[in-house]
Length: 581
Image 1: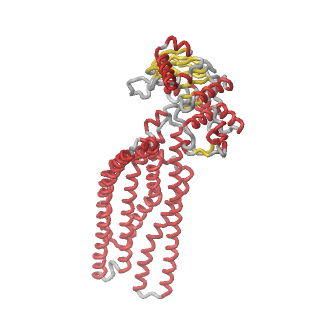
Image 2: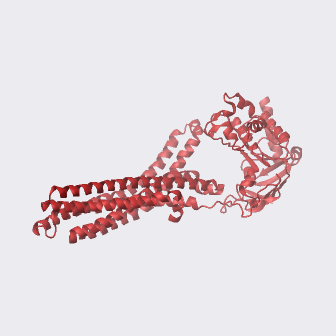
Image 3: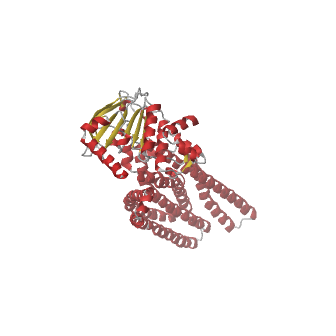
């Protein structure tokens, strides 16, 4: 785990090393100051002059200033190192997620990935900040103060040998009890984030069905689960503080009582006033170091589970990889499904696709129709290799898709989904997702083909109109047309429209298809639709049923020979007749 996390330090190695070095200087200064004060007290007791007092005073001021300087610089280096480390962690995780296949995303769940990128990284950042400063400072302070205490107090310093094991055992028990709770609580954080994400995403549905109270109850339950586990963990961690306080006061009482006794009974021969004051200071330093060290352990305990979750993301290999000698060029838009079987999971009992054998020529217009759950979308997701087949193979341009470089293949396959996504930014910025080098003329041409140019020009700012996040300030039909235009700018060899004209009227739908035939005749076009009207002029129509191809043919052929197609056509036309009446 540590080996993986260390790789994200990178350019912040220098401040990460500098912070402990500066902390060492701070600790040395703090440990020498009590020794000088003890000597000064003894000098005053012996009747020294003002020159000695001023000399000691000047030295103490310089050492205090050095300690302050070392501490300030260490704090700055520590902040730079920890914040930079957290930045790199988020960056590395995000980049890793970008390379994930749908299978990897499904494994983690979106809400869990969000928690890992935010809460978990923050926990690791705080732990790292403590490690590079406090976790270095405390052991050093313990060692130096312990050595100085023995030097100054002799046998009296043995009290620390009794206190340290008590604190160590107590701390070990606390960590043992809290680790399982923290492991469990982060999984519940995922559930809490999932509740929030789902609610916000479906806010319109929640309000339409007046389900706000139900959503509140669901959120409260998730929040209470997190609270309950955190409360249990905090109760156990709270034991640490009184244990520390007990040890601190026990040592202070011992040092003051036994020290005063030695000063009085030995008349300063075994222990004088200066040594006793130094012992009190070192006692305080040792116990404060132990207290801070316990806080570090608590933070590390909590961060360990977060670190494990981060490492899971960083070490997860994408289920889809480009081969070593990947093919970089797609010859044409021909597609061949050769006895394809597919399951979304190895554990799944049912096949999503079964024995699919289909051959599409480059430039053909193929319609795909079928009932809900007939695996229409699953079929086309295998073309850009969003998933890999379980058995058989899918070929594009005569080459198995698994032999292509993923980026090269996907650059030649444009997919427009029914649930279209627009990003916050201008219309131009959204269109350039298809081609970042696209000129204004190319964007306008793509929008004319997608029947989007007309409504864009009606906006006051035209192509510079700002699109809100998720495209909430445009209609469903406008959103679909903008997404089609964005796909066209890729100039792909294969264009897949997966229910992407469902929100436009039949006239606009027909104009879009007519534009495709005229302006991109060499591009293979696959149109998935529920409306027969959207596919009836296709070169061939594929009828899907239960993950299998039920029939393939033209509109007229299927009307004569296929019962499923005829039934859908009849029901849709009957519905139109009823509307007219």
